[in-house]
Length: 162
Image (cartoon, rainbow, N blue to C red; front, side, top):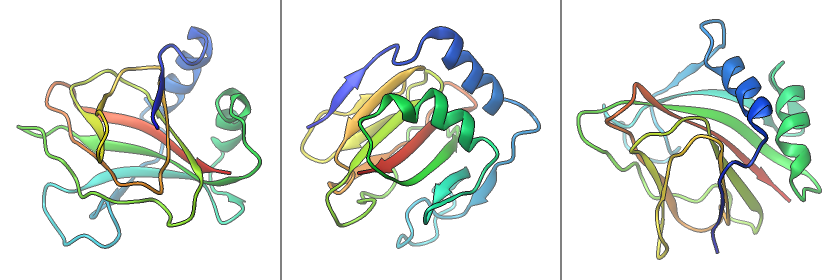
């Protein structure tokens, strides 16, 4: 089941996160495949910034996200978190259907901008990207991201947790 909450964070906290990420000094790294097992495809790229994985903070941004975003979740343990930036394309492109991990766990997608991109959930409604929107879902079920056409990029923070 998918749960969508608009205006998830107070405006000042949302602005703080967004301004930190939407900064020329914020490091992003090219990923030439969005899903690990997909074939190389020129339109299936994104830029990402790993925040947390394998029980290790990977980013100086971790403390900020942990305090402002993760602290609001019913979380026992963080599994992984990262920021995704999907470049604009001429038409909406759906990326490969995938699951994040095979075991049961929880996920949050937190959108940093409003655009015509979306997250699609197999057998359920899609959710449009809207700034300060949180989407709670089961990441062990099939889902797929898309590009956008009406902004430079589509931005989100993903966290997998128990």
